[in-house]
Image (cartoon, rainbow, N blue to C red; front, top):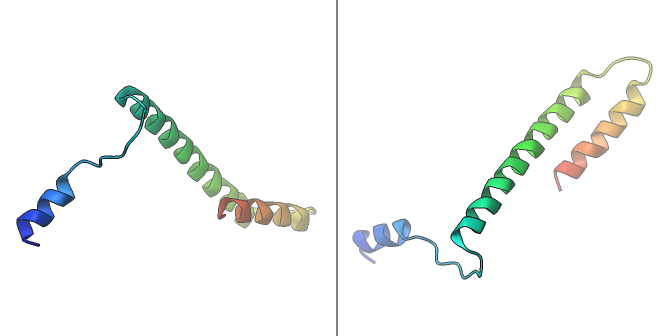
Length: 74
């Protein structure tokens, strides 16, 4: 394969068969992007609470947040 052929393949659009219109694809992509950003923010906040918890209920909250963090990583 020549360098030019490799460049053409890399720059070619994906031809994924779908019965969705281009507007539907863009809408779904936008919604999933927002959802992914929310999940990432929730993960970071949960991890922050997990590392900075203190007080009389430390163990209970620590275990709760640990289980939540394990669910995120699946």
